[in-house]
Image 1 (tube, rainbow, N blue to C red):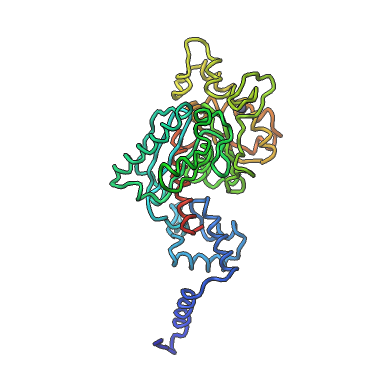
Image 2 (image 1 turned 90 degrees about the vertical axis):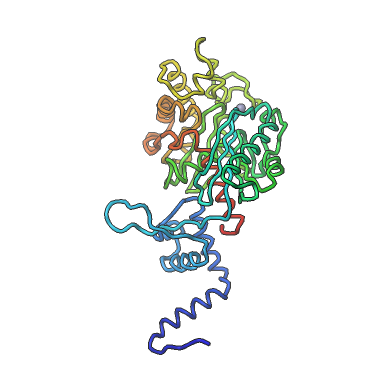
Length: 404
Ligand SMILES: [Zn+2]
């Protein structure tokens, strides 16, 4: 029985509205509005109502309705933002946490990092180990499973408690997770890393190029927070990039966008592992640079963080200049406001590498476009990929539970 209190009709209307809202499925227009709001929060950690209005183009009242409905349904969470100056902190909205732990795997050419995150994406445990990813990828995948189990066990959990896994591989992967340079990963021992990981872990594993993890980590919690259009460049044993355009990861028509390491440089003659001659990677990757260093120096001086050696710095600045010149036409096309550098060279030798990048961009880009773009090292250093992997796993877990 519904009690009608004639003195306070608005109370009843509100009550009836709530009952109706709970019982009636939203129509196509409401569902489309819901999707628009969820999508803008997909790649941005948190937004105010006003920022959602601006990002979606929906009216203020529509956004208020959608937010109210989704907060009460447990799909969005609301909390005060960190105080910025005086005054009351604004309320910010973010996607509600998924159910379960998150697992991130970051494979390099010679190393592996595993991280376990809580449902909000905070890292609980992490470990980096040496691994022969290039030469013995099958053994490396087994090692990834072993380290994952160990970390989960230390948390009193196991794989059954994991909602989603995300992995980054040091090679070009298409949208289906199929490797597109057969000479990588043990000369084609693993051509479908996504499938191999799925079978090994017994659960869905999003598998992307390692630069995608870096870009996502920087966008969510690093140097590119709130930046709409930027490029993440990883310079390590390989050289690659990931693009964020209009606040979204841009993976291209087949998933391979950002393969700058295989751009041919004039005058370069070295044979690349992709089969071509003169790729940027043959001159600016660690193996190529190590060949340039005089005798007392070896690869170690590039792989360990900078100690301010002027010879090493000079070689790395030259590498940064080549990468910057290669990115210049992409800057002319995209007009980004930021480039973030990562990897053993881009973050371990950040000062020398960024200096060269700056010179390369300034020398080959339209001046106003060059002025518009900052070049900064990764805020998360070499951890950025494992952090990005856990956050991507969170996004996939939310998508799997139909929140996106
Ligand atoms: Zn190549």
